[in-house]
Image 1 (cartoon, rainbow, N blue to C red):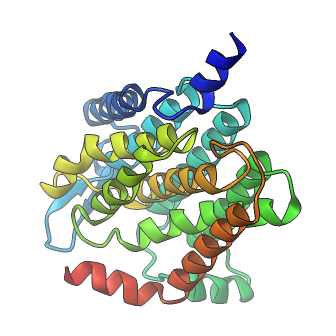
Image 2 (image 1 turned 45 degrees about the horizontal axis):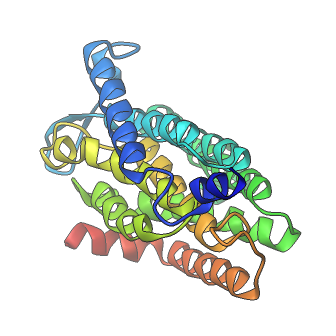
Length: 280
């Protein structure tokens, strides 16, 4: 009995990645459909004009965030702390992103520098709320997943940095969803919690990718940040103390550190990454 339980929790092909993927896709589509039928506050509140002058909705963002959080929280075989960290990080990232989508719709300022500059002058922008909110949630999730202080911080940077990276790519239809699909797919081959945690953003992104590409909706900050946070959680599960081997190792910490360094570097050249994504 003990052997079977261990294999179910940490073994090669379990817990069921396909079931988790389908759960994420189904939950995302269900929320997306509900928002389309009855958008809170009226349809106009959720409409935006995209880069091509077409009217699109923001429905895909909160749908992806909620679908991702629900699937991660209900994924079979995950440790309790992985469930809690997933719900915390994804919902916080999606919630902060949605706040910026709605409250910061008319604010032309973009990027860390602009929002930190406004903060120095006593103005708290929606972008600053998003920046600090997602950062704090990432660190809290990292603290749940890791045992040692250095690893907690590295995990937090990976989760928050991944959320920011996917949002940097959300400059044209399908860019953020496509990135989530491409980055999550290899994780399905990982053992232990990393596998199902990779299936979560894969399923959620797949559920709205066609509508995003068809310019009927957009992920916005809510969806991009939520999917990115979920990707970061999968990375931490693959390299941190909750990975399949269950053993601490220098290689695991080095892996987290390498991911964290890469994400910090990406944030530093965020404008260039967004321009490149828009040109593709």
